[in-house]
Image (cartoon, rainbow, N blue to C red; front, top):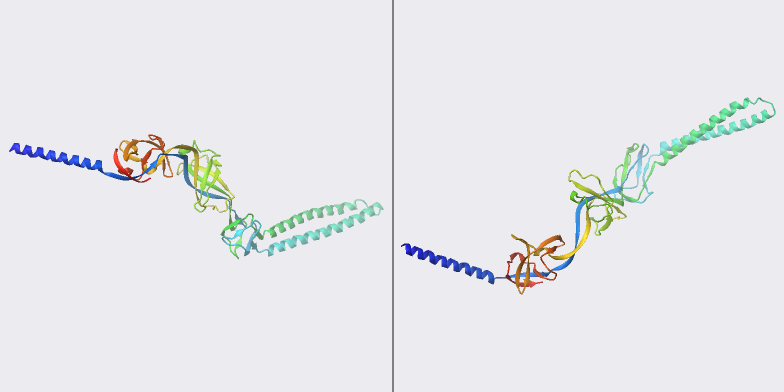
Length: 353
């Protein structure tokens, strides 16, 4: 009985071994379809990118410089303005009265001074002819001096009244677009109350937060490429400055760059900043050809329709290309699509290059 069991166990081992051998033979005979690519030279860029925001440096809020009610507004949100365009008219009736009163007082004082000058001239002639005492002129001189000082005060009042009257017309100090209309017709404005806000894109500032690990590499003067989601064209400017302190919540460096004369760029929007530290020309392969195996990163070099596994060291990955720092030679043919299914010395069929 024991001999029969042993014979059956031995026969099962033989059958199992034959099955394994047959499976191995099938794997060796299986042909995998792949695409290939040669190892090429590619210009990699050692660069870093980050998303920031754009700040407007010229976005003044136009405010009333006098106390008055709004009589008329000549703009609305979205209106394009040129420097000097009339924005609003405030009620000027009180200020006209004040100017008329100041000018009337000034005129009255000038008439008084003219009469005093004539009196002084006549009395001077009488003194010369010894008809009156020279002391009689002293009072007239004092009156003239007082009137002259009053004229200076009145002239200053008239200038103030004229200045205040001029402020009843509100003009745009810059060219730009009305970002927001704040005041409405009939509103009473105190000194400093806002009327409209103007946005000017002639000078903007980009704030791009880069990781603190780049603190030793980032420097003022380095070129930075800026891209806005609302503008097709990229622009390259120089880093203007770095904020000396890290941004507390993100521990990042605030990199500042000025954007000048770019009318299509908008304050308040986002911006992508890219700094290129250096360019590297090196061997490259398509990113998908790099396969991670227990032994590390490998590629499959194709020779005579057979894939040979090769360990490689990689560097920068950019635009679908991965830098090869060691392990391959220029011009070698490697597997791309289908590489993940390959093993060392697997037979392949090239479907496309």
